[in-house]
Length: 410
Image 1 (cartoon, rainbow, N blue to C red):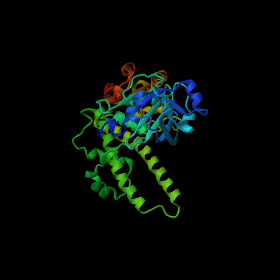
Image 2: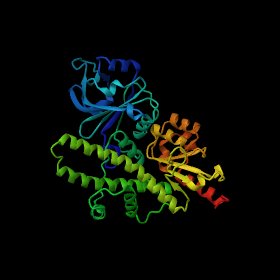
Image 3: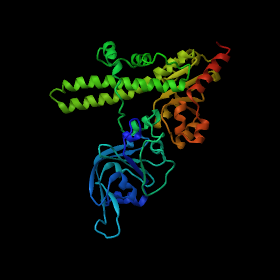
Image 4: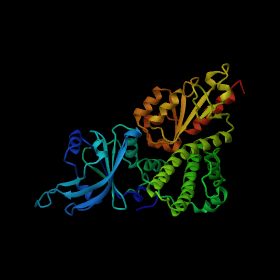
């Protein structure tokens, strides 16, 4: 295990495509996969039957179709007593996640350091499938027998923002060193409570006083986001520990579930607001005119309108001098929401931190006049063809600065 690399989270992984025949068998009574010899390096000698606790997850780009189930996988040799042959297999009980699988879907079996297994099925030709392949440094893969990767500590396996993003998408909690350097200061300023997202984003930037987006906006945006994430988890851990110490009252289950739900909802809403907060500060540093979350048509509120919402509602102001930017930490299917947010602006810009979006999705975005803006360090997770079309945050800032500089309406 090497800290800061995928080997911190996985001892090894095996990946394959599910065949249609195999899926039909999985939905009947034969709940097992044929193994390969290389799996012994991860799971051990199958002649000694071993049962692993396992979590099964089915993932699709449509959140409502994703599901998970707890269970187990048994690694054994079906021909244990045969003198010359072995037949490695992985047996599992019936579960909801695998019942959702279809032929062509991607199957990943990952062994974790706690000696449990993670079994992920990713819907074929989706963004999440592409992200899983990228996570483990695997090119397009069509094999119907397991391909195994061990020693997950190469340069690609270093957990930067791109890999961190995907790990969190598949439910792996990032093991950050808690930033206790600033904990006392946060407790003093915020009085042991969660501040507003605007306050916390400002605080996160203040802990990096020598950083300016004027130097490299793409890198700085990710740096600010990572810093805020680490600081927030440090504060969150402290606050939650205090709440848990105080107990959940008479109804322990309801109290626990309520706390868990509030944690998840807070994390999701805070991440999206943090992205907008840091972008807004970047626009200020670059002296760019903008309006944030102002109403256009039909009560829509684009994240940012350039140069202002006043100009947008001025019929005499030229359409080609107007620009909009939507900001979403993840796109998934939600990117379509922005198409009607500003009718006067034909080309919609969308900034996201989501890596390795599928070619199907980016092709559809181009058709729908949506231009993706991706921080430059995340471009590497896209195909060469996609990278020709992507623009980075620095490119977008230059575009807006040029429009506003050349505008006769300044």
